[in-house]
Length: 451
Image 1 (tube, one colour):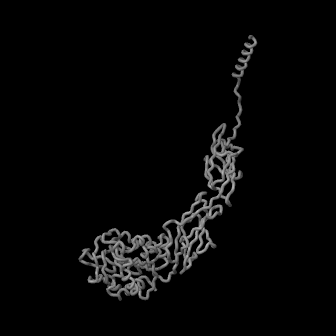
Image 2 (image 1 turned 45 degrees about the vertical axis):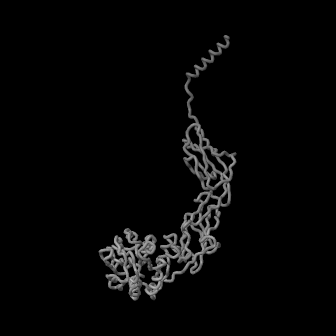
Image 3 (image 1 turned 120 degrees about the vertical axis):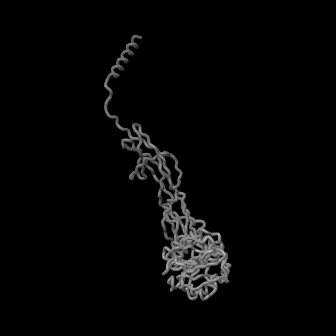
């Protein structure tokens, strides 16, 4: 008992002696951090997409993690403060395997000397492409054709490197950027004039994989490309019921003046390009002069003002010249002046003359270089133009309806005009057929310089 008591006393004295000594001095060496991946090296990783998301984290025993160095070859390193990222693993074949390295960096810039690493097998999935619904090519066009499409890739749409297109065969594909989804082709692009054409399209990804080939028109269809044969394009916006009046009038009035035709009312407007800009706009630009002819003053007969608004300002800006002639879309339309954005028209009269017929007076001639004109048929819902910055060609007054003389026809400037605008369909103004010939000669030859 005495022996155990003595040992306890000696132990206490030793502890007391050391507790009173000086503390240990000196710098403790910084310990490197450790790095971990969400999947460990012995994990089984099934082959997946070339679009790969990888997660990692780090731990530092004597500090904190300020970031990570990452690499795919352990030679070239980048730095990030994130704990995850999505990588596009570009491969040159159908599949490959990538090794990823990540090393944590602590607050004293010490880097984990044994980076975490793992293998990531990937399989490339081919892309796909399809033409956008509602952008189908008309069955007949002039030598301008615009196509719009959407590409996709399970590995990420950004992996589409190129789109390839070919005209009329699948042996001569040309590349455009993978950022492109709109293509306009012309004669210089390879369109064959006065013949049937077809476009083939496919996508190519970063690995060189190709999508199935799509075609426009689809199945076994083609579209016909007709050549430009004149300096004048007639946009025939005339209802079928008026063709018996319009066609003889045009034959007589044009006389020896040659023109091409685009009938945008035929087959429910099937010949109107679905992509107005650039396809329809560039079609107009093939011609120095455009004659846009609509019908009577009703919704179904009048010209397609919406299409004119979307296209003619660009055409005029490019230097084109326009003769536009149509009634308005009904007597109750009051805001249609804002739709005439291609001509110097301030607004349209709120009132309308119920009708203008063969028994009424001739139009009042304001510009004596133009011929006299009068109605040869029943014209309904005649509305006038307010146009303070234009030259008036014809006016008209009738007691029924408007109680003022209204402007019926204008041009933008006195000399070398680019726009002549009639608020009536001219093929109804055929009371004196010889005047129709004189009118067209005055507008197309004298004013617009056709030769």
